[in-house]
Each structure stands twice: as structure tokens, then as C-alpha cells.
Image (cartoon, rainbow, N blue to C red; front, side, top):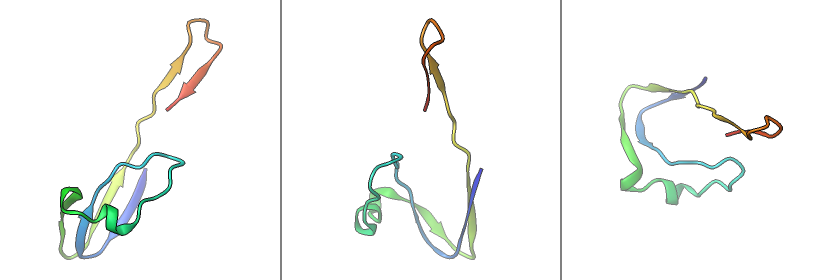
Length: 64
């Protein structure tokens, strides 16, 4: 689990694909990606969900 401690401000959210280049602040900080306003501090906890796919013979596995 990842824990991120935040102060007061605006909280934006966007999807990130591992290995991709991070977008600039100007791309992320738009009204459609505004999740909410923070006053007095906050923390966000995120626990990713992984799924393992396997071929019929069990020879090839991929977790994503």
C-alpha cells in the first residue's frame, strides 16, 4: 500500500500507465480531473489490484 500525505490545496487524479512519460502539470491540472479540495491536510492510500493471466498449459503467465 502506498501512502501519500497532502497539505491544503486541489487534488487532481489521472490514470498513469507504467513506463509512460508523465504528463506536465498543465495537462493534469484541468477542471475535468479535479477530484476535490483539501483543507487542513489529508492522506491518500492506494492499493493496486493485480491479475495473473495464464495459458491453457500453464507455460506462460503474465501479471498486470
